[in-house]
Length: 162
Image 1 (cartoon, rainbow, N blue to C red):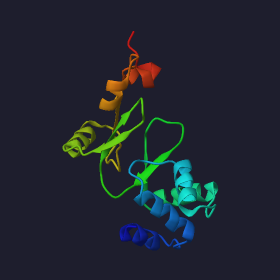
Image 2 (cartoon, rainbow, N blue to C red):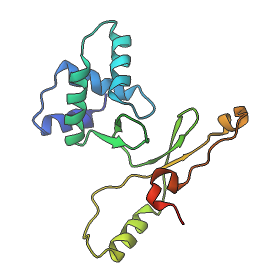
Image 3 (cartoon, rainbow, N blue to C red):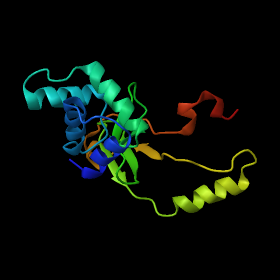
């Protein structure tokens, strides 16, 4: 467990309850973004019993996000995914097997500044998120059927060109 996250909990005035420590501990052993159900299953497997319920995990994740311990990750799925907010990185997500790979992108800060220079409504950007979606090498090899390629218009029908 990271002392940095525990310090953030204390600074936010949150008690170090067993449910918060268990949830925080679950993140340290997970290598990709997780939703509340994933964390619940992981903790149930680790403890062998229901030491924490799903509602408590949802509440804990909300308080962790508010204190900057975790951040939401957009994986274009039905539930909200979270990861520790300990390093700045982005993701590539396989649309077939859902594997996730982290990557660093140098130069995004310059892009952020360029966006602000061109914006007529905004003075600052508090945060950003960048995820790419595609097919991993393993799935490309194993895939026998054609793979639907990602296009921005598949996300928003208004983006389709006439």
